[in-house]
Image (cartoon, rainbow, N blue to C red; front, top):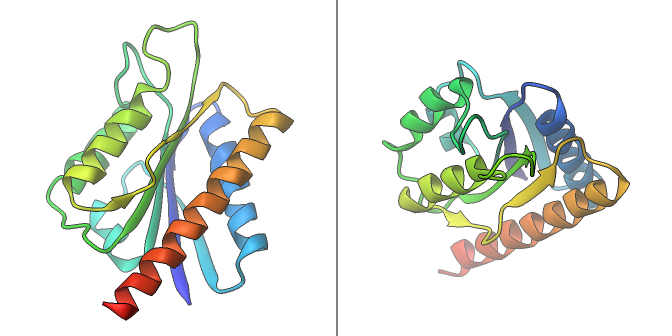
Length: 158
């Protein structure tokens, strides 16, 4: 049984909606994956070490920054060795701002520096996910599952 955690920061509920859609898809598509969701605010980053797969989501604040409630968590990630962990990043944003979904890129850079196996392209959704966006969430979840299973096979074969 694989253990996956979805950790997110959401102010308006948009990133939370993305997180829940991803969680539903993973649960429906793969019976051998246990999924948990957690809010990022106040969470100790070390919790990710208990999981095989990690999905991190955040909205973007100001001029392309992580929101306040994500800063401590991300600072905590910097001290972790995420080798052997499969990670994907997602978030919501608004094209009205110049740095659309920049928090996704910041999260992705952080986990790459920690040695994680990262799904190459983060999922970036404009504001609240509509049906087309929810389908993108489901496809993103399927790609994450494939990467998780591939890494699991490599781990057992290696």
